[in-house]
Length: 158
Image: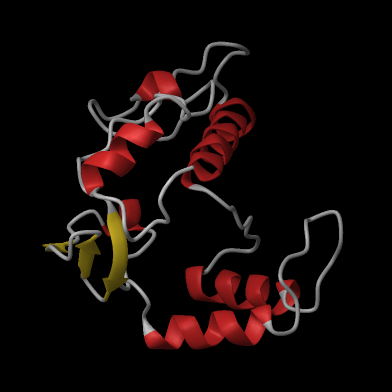
């Protein structure tokens, strides 16, 4: 039996992950237990300035009070609906996002990988339909040594 989290050291927790987690990431040897704003704290109580910001998903910092409040309001009424259903918040969100961006249509995504995949599809469609690129001749250009996601298509970009 393993000790409860909070009583195990960083080294112990990292070692415990090794045999049971797929090795698709190579994380820093820091086991984060708590966070507030731009600071994270490991299980031993050491503080670190979070310079990754969750790959920009946490660009408002950890546990931002306005975001926590909004999340609680939503979770108190409905956790999640898939896109197999409509929900009472999606239309207003899409309208406001389209207005903010000056676009006619938006496509919300759950992950950065989904956004990159969709961006590729939109760019290819534009290349073929608007720019007149011959069929199957589109080229995708990416920035070297960047992370775009782990899907079959975009993992090679990284």
